[in-house]
Length: 407
Image 1 (cartoon, rainbow, N blue to C red):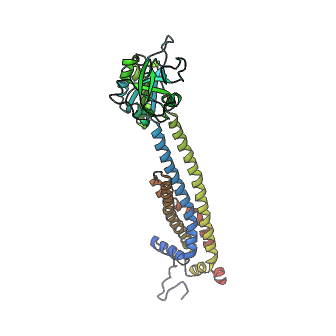
Image 2: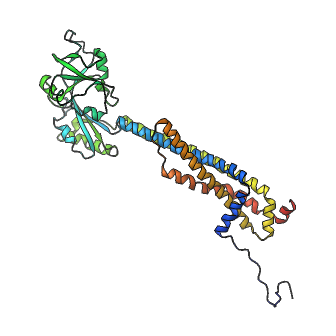
Image 3: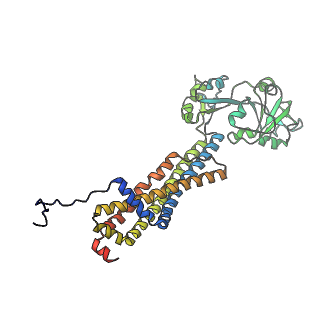
């Protein structure tokens, strides 16, 4: 009977090593990590720091961007203005009296108001020479102007149903200082008539022309100052997502017979700043994210290479007991994946906590995109594969006899 034959005279089949089931592979990989808890913690700490940095950058950038966006929205990224241009004959055009009501019918428009220049001057008292106007414009305003522009009253009160009909005036921040008026309990000489100062405004960032103006009610301007009722500046607030669409139809809506006589502003500079800010933050995020991933991957690869060197005896023993090169490669690749996954999960938690703490300390809204949390964990898979390929190949190339002789 030969070696290839069994006692019954049958030829013995060669033993073919079977592949590891996923559950067995995970168990073997986990045992390799649990056997060295301190090293696992330190190695996972390396990838955790990298992932935490990425998550924190995403979270802080998103939170900062949310705060910037909110601030810009408050300033008026959705503010458009329309003013009269020139006719075909080069004369100054006029906006129709009903233009504000017409613009209010545009669906995405949230509010619309207007101001009108009044041919009058304002002085501290009736003894000031007429030529010393201090460059203060007299403007007729509607009662909803302040809410549309996001302005606030520093002292006194804004125009109401009563004061908008009678000789009362609200001074812009600059005009009040030029007139030397600090309290509302004062009078000014306007258009040859005394007007009581109802209030003084804070600076209006979106409409600096308001700061150097004396504002009187629309009805009062028509009654006492000879105002003809034609708006000279029309302000609209629209849905931020529909600003461009509103701008495209604003001129035709303001003056349907002659839209070419209407000058429409571009979206406010704040909107352009918002877009530039988003682009800059996205670039910063991408650069720092890549650096963090590279650092984490190098840390895992370094840990796994050292592990292969120190575990040669274990590798040789497993090979002598029938483990194939594929088994060894799968084992070390699984360990690398588990190690990177542990670091990724820990890093995600730490990064989210850092984001929340930092945003709260700055008074920002905490904005951490869901894709950042999920992606931070999933991105550790390719990192673990890339970082574990070389150590796995090196481990599988260890000869059993040589490894056992080194023990």
